[in-house]
Length: 114
Image (cartoon, rainbow, N blue to C red):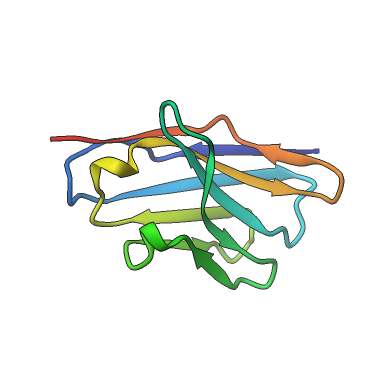
């Protein structure tokens, strides 16, 4: 079993920055991890992804603004979000799987507004 806890969301003005954290516990060992977001009335979408060996990728809408990283212990993943835009407003979730089971955190709200 795996537990994921996101934090770091909040209200920020356009152009501002936030760093989200996803702390994983339980049966975690070199997991891949994804950051997703879901805006009101929209489907959940993948934002950024890190493979087990640390390679990252992100969707075009956040390239150059969002950066995904993790700590050396491979138990905490981060999403550094710079130059935030109103369209980045959403609940952000981290996600991993252990083969047969998909795990999600409870989400953290990011609101970009002046």
